[in-house]
Amino acid sequence: MNDLKERIIQTSLELFDQHGFHGVTVSQIVKASETSKGGFYHHFKSKDELLFVIHDTFITYVLQEAQAANITHTSPTKKIQSIVRSFVGVFDLYKPHISVFYQESNYLKPMYEEQIKLKRDEFKKMVFQVILEGQATGEFRRELPLEITGMAILGMVNWIYKWYKRDGTYSIEEIADVFTDLVLHFLLPVQRKQVFVDQMLHVPFFYEFK
Image (cartoon, rainbow, N blue to C red; front, side):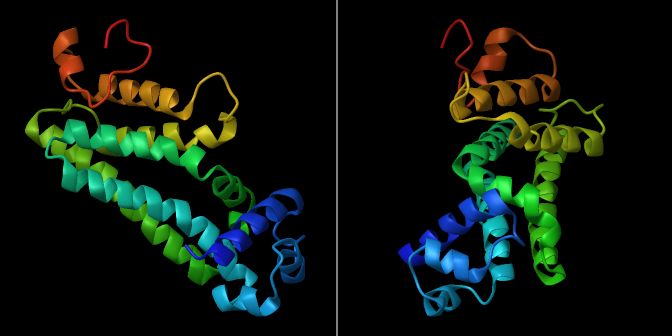
């Protein structure tokens, strides 16, 4: 990404977090990012488009990671692990973006909100499809209702934004270990420990052996 564009985004993230979307003007963003209005409008049509880009950045990331998981892995078990790990990771990688998203998402213009919704729906559809695929092949428990199971995964991970702190007790990688382990344990049929571990992409930090 262009250095100036990234500087404007990072500056606006800090300002929106402190003062709210409507509490910040383009002039303030320009001054704090040490650019000009010409520099700002070269990269963004408006402050509304800037807010959209902030939202779109991390949603695009998780969607691309899910698409990559589908290409990289053939097994639904490995696909869901990869998707969950990258989904958890986004809450550290794009923590400021996500904070602003939850604070200011109501201010998105309808045209931008629709674009965000399309990507969120596409990601949800991909998660559901992997679960459906796992149930069809017998890798996942067939008795689990698809809608509830998929929303349980999405809801569990999305809630990370409420409590995750970079200086907290556990790193984002360790949190991903726990979440992936929980997801596998409710998706996979009951089986012997070693068979279970053999299906994991990554052995969690809290396991007694690795």
